[in-house]
Each structure stands twice: as C-alpha cells, then as structure tokens.
Image (cartoon, rainbow, N blue to C red; front, side, top):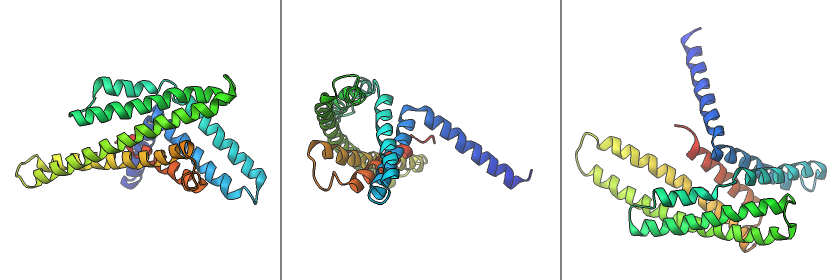
Length: 234
C-alpha cells in the first residue's frame, strides 16, 4: 500500500469514527432526522402539483421525521434545568438571560411531549393545537433570549481579542484562536436560533413569510446544518 492510499484510508476512518460519535449523540441524530424532515418538506412542495403520488410519500416522510424527533426529545426539558443548575452565567445580566432562555426552552420541550402524544393518538387529538401553541411560544421566548445572550458574549469575545492583540505574550495567539473558535460556534448558534424562531413564529402568529414552505424549509435546514457543525466531533 502506497503512502497516498494509506492517508486516504486513514482520513476516511477518521470521518467514519466522527460520524459514529456524532450519531451516538441525541443532538446528532436529531439534526440528521431534522435534515430529512425539511428536505422532504421542500421536495413535497416541489412535486405537489405535478406528481401528487410522489408528493404524498414525501409528506409521509416529513410527518414521520417530525414525530420521530419528538420521541427522541423525551426528557430533553431537563437539559435547561441542568444548565441553570451547573452554569447559570458569569454576570447578573447573563444569569437573568440564562433563566429566561432556559425557562422558555423547558416549556417548549415539556409541552412538546404532550403534542407528540396527541399527534400519535395516545391522548386527546384535540389537545394538539393548544399544546403546539404553548410549546412554540416557550420556544420563541427561549430563542429570543438565547440570541441576546450570544450577541453579548460575541461582543465580549471581540473586546477580549482586541485586548490580546494590543498586548504581547507568548500564549496570546493560542488564546486568540480559542476566541475565534468560540465566535464561530456562537454565530452558528445564532443562525440556528434565528431559523428556529421563524419556525416557531409560523405556529404562534401565522403570516405569509414565516408560513411559506420555502421559508420553513430553508429555516429548518439552516438550523439542522448549524447543529451539525456545532455537534460534529473536532
């Protein structure tokens, strides 16, 4: 085996290893299925008029993916509670934002359980609309405060980087690289939260922009792929 083939196989193995680790995470499998959900949504919209039989298959794929994601998120509301318990924030402002954002997310995930159960017929199907609204409202509130917190932390990171660049130190370059990596992750988080906020608003206050299939489809994929980036093993 020559050196080029060895490098190629080694790289492929590293990628497979990372994919296995990624899919072993709850967030990893959620982002994969979310990609299925919104790709099938866009595909259904594209062929709805011309190929109604194929359109129905894509619609079934979309619905099944959405319900699967709800099942995967069982107990997920505890994540927000644990975040507040373990790391509420370094300043009073960030702690307040953490309480508001995580509380909204907890409402979202908690009532999403009942939405899932009503959609699969375990509890009264008439509850679905109310549960969907409460869940989406909590989701929207959470995302607004997560976005505000991320912008504050992005600003702090830029100030810290500027300070490091103006001073001398052998470890400065390493610290700057860490700040840059953190900035990319926060920008990905903002992109995902803005995209998911659009989806939540489509449920809370239906309007032509948020409820258009292209808006929902693109928002879902932006959120999913930003999640891929953030959860992919380094």
